Amino acid sequence: MADRTAETARKGRRAALVIAGTGVFWVLATFIGGELELSQRVRALFDLMALAGFTWALVLIYQIWRARQSNQR
Image (tube, rainbow, N blue to C red; front, side, top):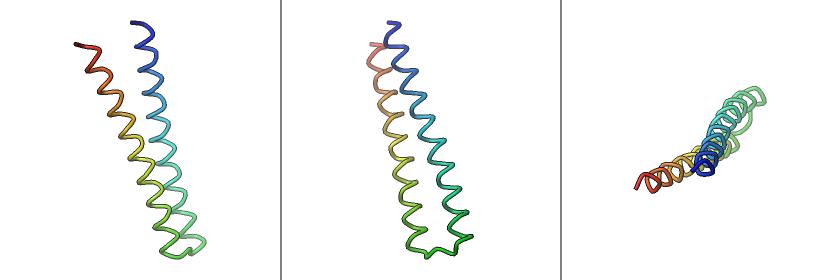
C-alpha cells in the first residue's frame, strides 16, 4: 500500500513539474518571440509546443486518477 502511495506521489510531482515547466517555457517563448520580433509561424510553433506539454500533463493526471480509482475498488 505504501508503494502505491509513493508511486502516486511521484507521478503527481512529475505532472506538477510538467505543468510548471511548460508554463515557464510558454511565457518565456512569448516574451522572447516579441522582443526578437520572430515571425508568427515561429510563435505558433511555440504555442503548439506548449499545448503539447499541457496535453501531456493532462494525460498524466488522468493516469493518476484512473490508478486511484482502481485502488479504491
